[in-house]
Image (cartoon, rainbow, N blue to C red; front, top):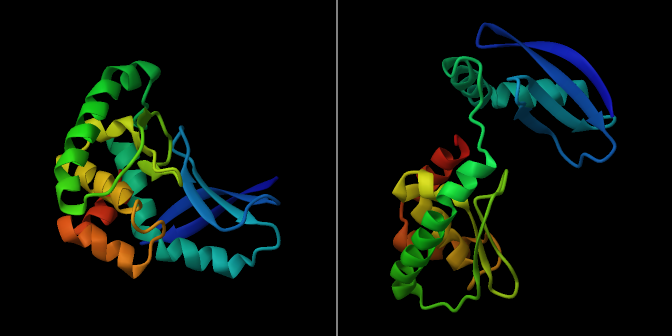
Length: 186
């Protein structure tokens, strides 16, 4: 993987970032590392103008993430194994309770419910009907946890993100679009 340090001006602020060109990358990705370093990963031979345009389109998100990092005194929130163990059973109870509540409106069957310590996923639904949830559902606002739970439950009927799927979600979470935006900021 090739790496170089670059700078871009976003909203009159010079932002330094690591540009990583990877043969394994399929698309462009922006992330904030543990030390607060901004990284942009792209496939090899990706045109530079597209990188800058993408970063300008994501300027709001980038600046918010940097601001949050600075407000925490240069610390990103770190979730430890102890944090996971402390909240795992509360997340399991929440998932069971809220699934029972929302399934009154859907009446879908599902298999096992698992609570996991996942870095990037809030939930998932397997083809066999098992539902997996991130333990952090126990520490986010209730409306966000409800959205994630309904989202995965609706995959029991529509195993995709089609209009039909989103119509199912909207039955019980009509403001799902706003909540999705909020979830992306967590």
